[in-house]
Amino acid sequence: MTTTVITDIGSLVTNDPTLGDGSPLGLIENAALVLDGATVAWVGPTEDAPAADEAFDARGRAVIPGFVDSHSHLVFAGDRTAEFNARMSGRAYSAGGIRTTVAATRAATDAALEANLLRHLHEARRQGTTTFETKSGYGLTVADEARALRIAAAHTEEVTYLGAHIVSPDYADDPAGYVDLVTGAMLEACAPYARWVDVFCEKGAFDGEQARAILTAGAAAGLIPRIHANQLYHGPGVQLAVELEAASADHCTHLTDADVDALAQAAGTTVATLLPGAEFSTRAPWPDARRLLAAGATVALSTDCNPGSSYTSSMPFCIALAVRDMGMTPDEALWSATAGGARALRRPDLGRLTPGSRADLALLEAPSHVHLAYRPGVPLVSAVWQRGVRAV
Image (cartoon, rainbow, N blue to C red; front, side, top):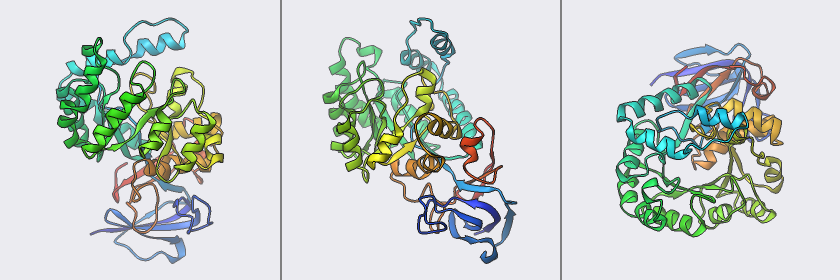
């Protein structure tokens, strides 16, 4: 097994507070780290770095853990440019939203869906993302949901069954029948490919009792709950997430004090995953990250990459939005995009660079991680290692 030492790192973010400066980022200046196969074997000052089979000189640049994108919708076909253009132009738009993508996805071949997924994965990797979660939800039939998850599972371990994205157009007059399908035959076909079960708990999608039934059925089938919660309006999603010990409540835009308190009390179990790309793309109110952090909640950042409401695969862009518009510091935003995402996926091996963690990291063309927010829109990621292998 080949070992690699990366030396002369100007600033190394470990996300281990027992290292370096003792902050949550565990910053080590003038650092080095050793990769042993797919694992980080050693971190510390460059002058103390052990020998390795191969060497890489970071030349004073910053190294961060690879981004952990814990919420995306990447198995889809079609384009919703007209919808976005109308929304940004202040014009009414009457097309079908998610239903438009459902129709295009159903009509696409497996090869086309996989090619589109891979295009987005490569795009994200070039921007430092080394782990991603992705969902079904654009098929809404037993066969189409199962094939979406099968395609996704060939490329990530973090696959989410989202048959409950919206009520299928085929069941427009029978939402209860669709819930029966989602918790019955569709779940049975999809569970072998998924780790997670999700539901869009929102007006116009699924109410609290429907969401409870879907998540409970998924849990009984061995899937771990997560939930789209409180994005468009205040609703029961956050409270349901905490009650069911979901791994994450995602969006969290419209919160009461009771919701914030619940997420703070459940900080070790349920992560508040914030998705600023959605607010940017819809001109909706921003989630109040400062309010959640001040209360003690665990916060993750993710892209929500999807063709309708957040068509970005860029975690650096989401970091910049979180710092500029959601009250986060650059340190908090980076932690939330790496260790926070790992918490939302319950993956202690990810989102940090410390002995024993997975060797997923990004080299920045900058001396500090702060440049991710300081220089928004600039392609700062110059190299990426995934499982110890140079990928970019």
